[in-house]
Image 1 (tube, protein in one colour):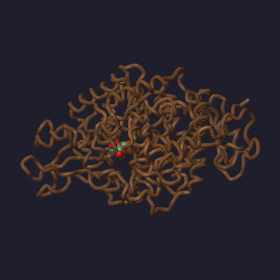
Image 2 (cartoon, protein in one colour):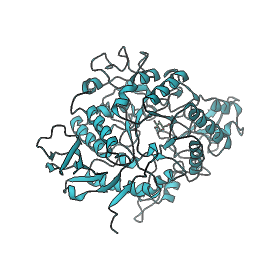
Image 3 (cartoon, rainbow, N blue to C red):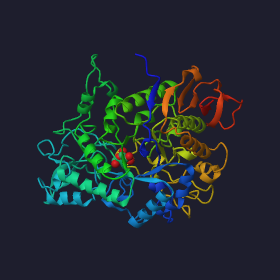
Image 4 (spheres, protein in one colour):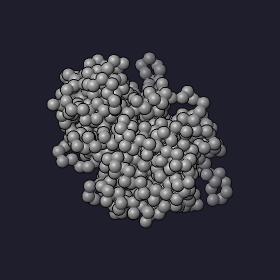
Length: 567
Ligand code: GLC
């Protein structure tokens, strides 16, 4: 079968989220307004204009809710309040008003799979004892073995160790076990229990009534656990080996990982979409790490489910010609089949920054970072490839996410010492996996202003910046032709002017050769060169390029991208 020429056509007059570029703020590390070394809401408000200048459409905030901060705020103890580390509800309202007046929408991060162990529901569950309705808010089970001292099943925590922790019952004796996909401070809620669903309806409405434009839903694929909580399972290949996830059917994947992507979770998606749609112009995005064929992930964005789901397949596709072709084609085909745009993304707070990934050999999975004892990345190579991939990605129709700092070309902190590490992964694996702190380091704003390069007024910073961050500071790049900041600004401006987010897509083999790749979106050719030899650019107006100083007019060097308005 030959592929259709045009692989994707946007809906006319599409809703904002189908085309938006959404900027992720990690509140701890964006800007510190009160000098305690921890980013906060007032710090964000004071710096909002720089984001308007960047040219984004919306902001997604990682959690700032009340939390003991055992997993940097993904352990919420009160969903309807702000943690004092970040400010208070009045600070949030002021931020929202200011953002809206600058034309920026705000998305907040909802964490429904689990609460903090300090949440009043979990504290009540501990006190109420076995068989109580309070315990039924969570997933409590008896242990296995004569003394019930073995975890109820073999499920491994994402952060290392078991998913089960045993509690001390009100009578002072060891008792039941509770489930936590992540840290023991993050007990999983029982989403089969109606009161849990009702509570979250209220939480959604609380923020929607406050005026937020939508949600990013944390661990959206983990809320429903397979009936009976069976052990994880491996499948054999015909040759008798262990089947890899890539070779499993969707049904096998559901059995293999009994806590990821279970079919019943789609009922929750639909329930929430009704709430979202009962308000004007709101949207929700799923963080769903769904393995297997992309058709499985596309189920999350059927018309009555999520508006967006992060295209993690694209995130890890890699910067090669073959990988880009495959991931982009598969994405348009799978998401297009359910009427959804793709949501492109390359970096976030859980993964090694893409400019650093591209400076490394080999791939590293979610939950891991790079430590001082590891082989260190090639910073210049990574930056070159990372900028190229971003320029290629932002030319594609659909929504896109960028993670704070990538507009500065900021690398991962790859030599952070153990004494600074905070990610629970580091502790649960006894340092074997260093965890995600390296991508969460506070942003440099003014080069040399103080030790944190202006992140806070006095140089304080909850994680130290590496030496190199000074040269990446925003003020050192602002207005400097060819800087990564100016490149991002130009890409976002042209993307908007040319309507690329809401455009159409076709490959343009007539504009590329073996080592280059080109597509056309709304009459704009996006050309990338993957090979060592320079390629000749098509005729037309050069709108933007990663290669600031074209060494020979009309030629594109290796790992460079150009956008050209075809004449
Ligand atoms: C998501 C978050 C991650 C967090 C985990 C548990 O994957 O993005 O940061 O640790 O969920 O809430």
